[in-house]
Length: 91
Image (cartoon, rainbow, N blue to C red; front, side, top):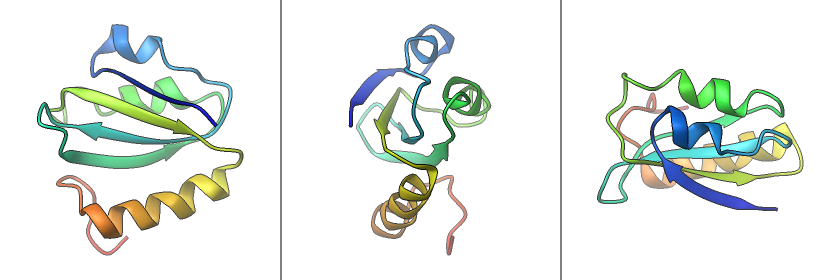
């Protein structure tokens, strides 16, 4: 599936595809993960936009996956490995 990286602002988020479930990562300017989450098909832009103003981040990187279940499984692995600053620990 595809991946894409955009600036963490409304204009950047509007450029993201919305046709498949995604795993998204909000990253600092240095590339460190601030938050990792999933979004269902049709709700990608809306879900990521919910974080604007709450999490200081420079970019959003998404990875399209074939199902929400696959995205959630990968999310759990990424959170466990990278321990993003704004994710609840132990998820």
